[in-house]
Structures are given as structure tokens and as C-alpha cells.
Length: 158
Image (cartoon, rainbow, N blue to C red; front, side):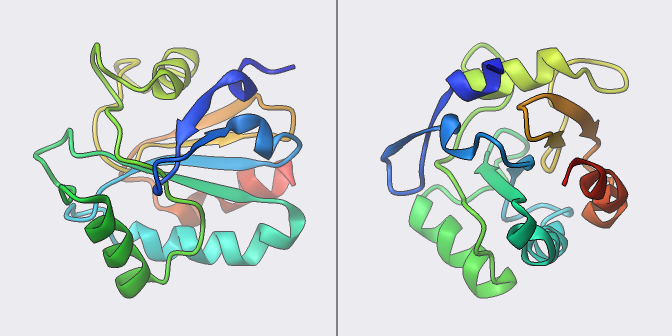
């Protein structure tokens, strides 16, 4: 079993969920921010989710305020913003740190397993990880990579 499935994450409602829930499904895991230049990527992520969810794709969004405090302080504001402005219906989780000593264990695992161009640490909002049905990290995408450019790789793991 992939190590990915051993992690528990906090949902937006503060309940805990095991990533084992998503076993057998391709995943896009992304750290998000509501007040970032890349925030419009929510729209493309939602489109990919809608297009491929019937084939098993899940998009998992993890808000983070670590980069210039570009996330709302309340979880409710974040959720309302994502739903009202971008129609986000894919799972969104509680706000987390994605780098540094207080980084969420899931993001420590993801970033150390698939290093970025210059570093293993998450450099900015909207770093994206593609996970196959077996829980393997297939690819890491830079914040500036649009979700549409992930589509060919997503199709391969469906």
C-alpha cells in the first residue's frame, strides 16, 4: 500500500479524513490561496474535476496562507469565496502550512518525494501533484502551470 494512504487530513469542517478514502482514484492535490495571482486556477481545476470525476478523478484543495498571507483567516470565508466565485465542488480541506517545520505531514511527504525545479520545498500557491490510482506521485507541477496543461497526464492515470 502506498504511504500516501497513511495520512489523515483535516477537512474544512474540522473532521479528520484518511486519504485511504481516495484509494484507487487518481488525485490532483493542490495548495490553494484565495487572494493570489494564480487564484483563477480554481476555475480550471473545477473544470477538470467536472470533466473527469465520473472516471474517478478527485481534486483535493488545501488552502495555505504561507505566501504573503494570501488566504482568508477564517475557513468559512475561504469556502464561501471558492464556491461563490469559482463554483468549487471538489473537496477543500482545512488551512495548512505546506512548507517549513510546521508543514502538514502530507505536504512534507509530497514535496520530499517529488522535488521541484530548484528545491524540494513548496515555493508558492497552486503547486500541484498528480497521483495515480495506486497512490504513486506521478508528477509535480509548478504554480504557474495551468491545470489545462495537466490534462494529458491526467488522462494517462485514468
